[in-house]
Image (tube, rainbow over all chains, first blue to last red; front, top):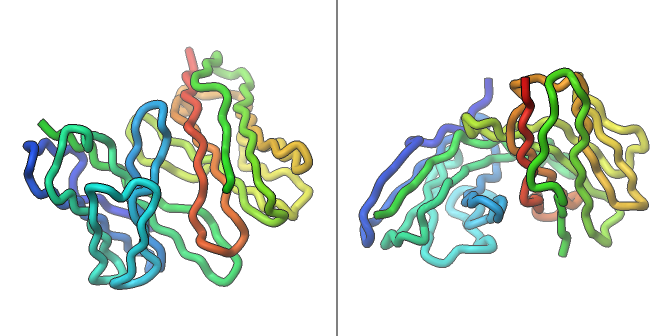
Length: 115
Length: 115
């Protein structure tokens, strides 16, 4: 069964800490994505990557950075966590073969609380 | 830019009954994909159903079916014989054919199935 695995289900961090959220997929997908999910706001794209060492800003990149050193791993970094980054973070991957797409495979999510 | 609107933030239905979740979108594209995703309380988001805009036939997956009205830019999800396990957030998503392979999500509809 194909999987996108996020390393933590729940995290509690202090304001100002550097936070790493890890995501690994075993499907050999080219594309990987980080979203945050907040009630009433749906899913908002933070960053995405089409290939190793490539990254593109999404709709809300401020306060975040990403790293993709290997195809299967896409990390989200909060350089200095703030309380307004308390949220659910979802990782997703997809394979785009030519013009075809079958949508995303999501991870289980990481609930981050910044205190 | 595309927009996706889910006009029903919350819905409820009795077990075994049928419920329809609405989704409308705005685009100038002629070829695209539409998706419904389900996010149960356990949080992992899964793909429910996928529709390709150039196909006239409405997609069906077991108890889940869509009513795709391309001219009206409407993509509703019908759940027949609702089960308690259908309780979840449901997200409608639009993805342009080719291009960036990044979907635009609606804000979601929370569905509760009552016994």
